[in-house]
Picture 1 (cartoon, rainbow, N blue to C red):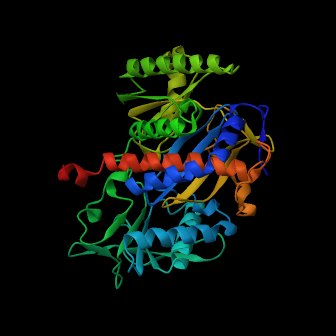
Picture 2: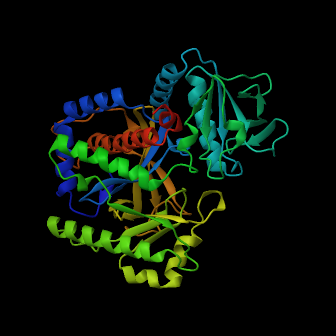
Picture 3: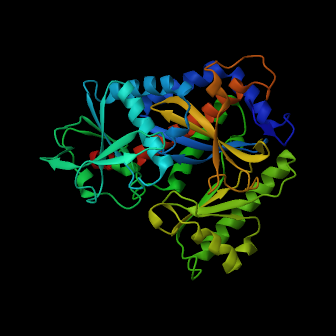
Length: 430
């Protein structure tokens, strides 16, 4: 099933789909050459928005907590990718220490951890769970909705190595974005692989830096296909410290919003798009739902409107301070008349699956990542068919998925660029 698009299936998105399918050999060769030069993140998820006239990522997670939304049919792909990733990093690995987030009260998140344990166990590893922080003093059982259990154990740091009682891992997999800061127990590990690296966490990471990298990747890719990079790239800007309660630093936000709206209007006029442009204001240094949609810069003068941004709590209870301004990409995909956003999930450089985040209460200019959202497997969950050359654009689920996978991999490649630029060891080497 390809979700219903309100816009007619004849616009630039279908021209892009056609061009991508016709260029598949060149695209795959281009990705191969890029991966020879750049190391992909260990795992990634990319949240996309399909406007009918534009398809672009709007968020890229380096500690994805959504593996529970992959179907059983997708599991073999995830296991194969996990095996390939581990073989590159630590071929002799037999033990994997998985460190989850502290929000272990969320049934959905625990199911994500359960699926990760399943993937890496089937990839041939002994997997155990370690708890950050000092709250867990002894092995603790966590009940899952299906009646099974996970066991969370206290971490042990011994002579520069991190493990559990009677468990010394070669590889440590973080499923925790470190929004609350980097614990000392994770620093300066001796001959152990920490994945993703510490500089992938929010104490270092910035959305603005990621989308600068994505813009570079999108331009290279667009040159390969002979197309306008704007069709796959959301325009963006960034501000430093902003206090939404006192309006401190708000002038920068207004300037960025006004400039971005002007650029988007120009693009809409160029492509004959009869939509009213909007931008989104979100935290630059955290994940979460602190997102404000703005269609007119005057809206920022209204304290009640601004309060939407700070009332959307970001991860670990922080409020947005550093601000990222991004072109709003409306979504005209619908499943049963509800807004749908595709999310592509990757391990190493491979797409392993995906799903639609669906929300009946949100509009096309609002995020589906909000309380009340549900999840529907992407069309390709029903089969692992390859794209079908010659199929009419917009009519083939595998073809539409292939295009989603290409954009998802562009976001993953941008994350690789981003991590290289922020690698403290690379700086010291220079």
